[in-house]
Image (spheres, rainbow, N blue to C red):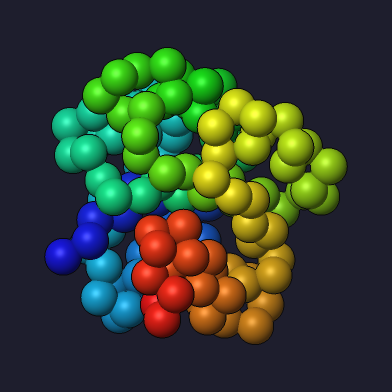
Length: 128
């Protein structure tokens, strides 16, 4: 089973996204802040990380940089999640993010299908 680390501080988004991912057949590990996310990434080596930009303790961009600098986590693809505009997307992709996903597009609005598609594309599973 494919393991996903979801680092999201909003309880509503964390729980609803986790439920959708589990329903889609993924094993999900969740973190409420960047510090916990770093620890869980090192402990579990997930297949992919869904990383909120605005996290307490360690921000998403700082966590991304730390993940990519650590040989143990550097190869894990990271999808950055934000409710802000994608104006920072270029910088985050430069820092190692596999892609950028606006929460309002799929996590809050039309349902989880677009997020599942982004995960599948990032993992090289176009049918997901």
